[in-house]
Image 1 (cartoon, rainbow, N blue to C red):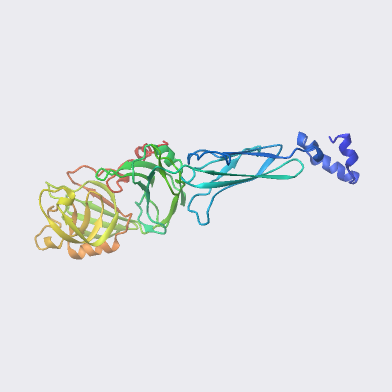
Image 2 (tube, one colour):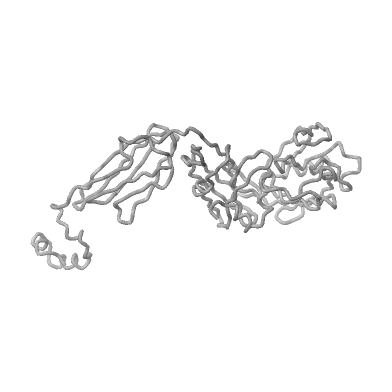
Length: 396
């Protein structure tokens, strides 16, 4: 009900008064006289007199005698590459807290606005600086923005230095897909280079024409031991023709399927008994019309130094599917395994396969005496059952 004092000050018709009374809540703020409203007061932490703060430290804004209507935190300097800080209001709209990390070594300005019960606004500013990073970590994202890739391509972030606080990094990563699919992050390490990655793969292979977007709010994330990431990263890519090539070491064949339809069966010669080819599911990493391959580069005692045509790269340890014209006429293809671990084929077949191969295509190799390729050796992510892959997430 309205107070007696309030009724004396109203000049609207009686029917309007009745409508107003019916619509108003019984909250205390409904009876506040604007004349008695105190000015809104805003407090910002850190203040302008604060020492430089850690990039992961929170920014807090509170309002008394009013509610917050705007909080904006921006990096100083035109064209700055530093990130803009986001945050969230409390339910009462009397406090705001940042929800992301900030770029190291950056000056930020806070502008906050609050409104009191009388509708009058108050504005408060603060300027502070984040501490510079004494150690930094770099990140490389695969695939690149706008790429069209095969159905086995994971989303991958590779780091220049080991990440000890994996959960802190993973919490800042988000994947959106169209259509929506289930998937999980998993942390792996390349057994040869030591490069640490976090990959996101769906539960099963991608479907054709799926669109995938990564958003990684990494600027200012402490990867451990005060080693900071300095930038946000993102990528969007599309899944192209579903292509899977099945290599049967015992039968000396590679059968290529596209959209589930067999395109060709190619006679091949894989790794000889002393240098067997990896078993398992591999993903095309890249390809080149000519690659120089040496025994020293892969630690093989049997010396060789060859320029290899139509080379499709499968593992970081040096497995390729390529043309091996030096073996033509020797009766190897389709008959016996005589390579140093790669999948070799004729010049014509090698070119045919090269022209179709796309980054992210699946190559499955079976029948070898060698172990299954590890998850970190190229994109060996698919060699783990999905529940096991999920366990590699730092947030699982």
